[in-house]
Structures are given as C-alpha cells and as structure tokens.
Length: 227
Image (cartoon, rainbow, N blue to C red; front, top):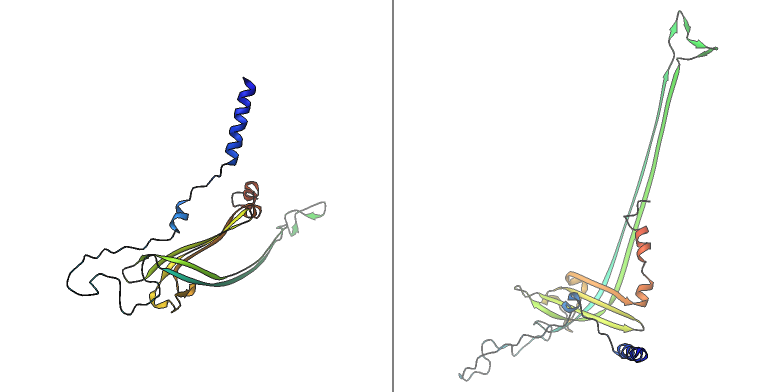
C-alpha cells in the first residue's frame, strides 16, 4: 500500500513538472497593452450623401496617428549629462595666555615653578570636497499605440517591446504625450518632443538577478546601516 502511494505521488510530480506555468500579468504590464480602436456606429440616413456626419472618412486624410489604437513610432534620442562640485576649507587658531599673579612682588611658585600661570591654545581645521558627475545615453526606435486623445487633440501614447532571450526577459516601455503637429510625415516623432516621458529599460531572469545585490549586501550598503 505504501509503495503504491509513493508511485502515485511520483507520477503526480512528473505531471506537474511537465506543465508550463504562465505568470499573471501585473497591473503595470496590462497598462502597456495596445489599445483597441474605438468603433463609431453612424446611423444610416437615406439622404443620398456619400459622406455622413460622424463618419471618420475624409477626401484628404493625414496618414499619421490621430485616433485611439493608431500606431506611432517613437525615435528614442535621450541623452543627459550633469556635473557638480563643491569645496569647503575652514581653519581657526586661538591662543590665550594667563600669567600668574604676583604676591609681594614675586610669583607664587612651588619648587621653583610658577603654579598659577596658565596657557590655553586651540586649533581647528576642516577640509571638505565633493564631486558628482552623471551622464546617460539611450537611442533606438519603439512603436507605440495611442491610448487616449485629450480635449486639446494631444495624444497619450504607450507601448512596450519585450525580448525573450536565453533565461532572461528584456523589456522597453515608453509613455508620454505627443502633439499631432510634432509627428513627422512618416508617422515618427522624436522623444525630445514628447511631454511627460517615462522610459523604462530593464530585465528579469537569471542575468538580471546576477547583476543585483542580495538582501544582506543591500542592508550593509543602504542608509539603515549606521557605519
């Protein structure tokens, strides 16, 4: 009986190991999914006109993105640099001499040494210097979709590109607001002309885990460690 139960348990483990586990998407991942175009239902009017009010068809139409669900290509051209330096020097010297009093024309001494004579001195010095330098560069292309058309006609765009590499998942996410006037005729726009830009480039998997600190190392390197 025990051997039969062990065999059944082993079979269940083999079946479970053969199944593929699909992780659920987080709320942030779902927010970058492509938006579906809005379907406009125009009531039919038998007035003989080819173009009816409310129809999104025109004789001369701009092929660039302008509606929810349209695709727009972002030209990533992000480059930033910043530097700062500071230096502080301070010094202070202080000397106080207090000669001993005289009694009957002579100083108070003990074994030939004046005992009431004092000499105080203090010396303080501080030198501080700090330098900070930061630069970043990010270039590439990413096609996104229009998620929302604002009241002034600006387009809220979002999109992501996920690369499934060997034991690692790399993704690029982009979000921002685009003016239709800034879109080039080839349906591209530079990231310099996108407002409220949010660009995320990261990865998950064994490679990303190898490049990150462990919890113990983060504790000693973090602000909670007092030394």
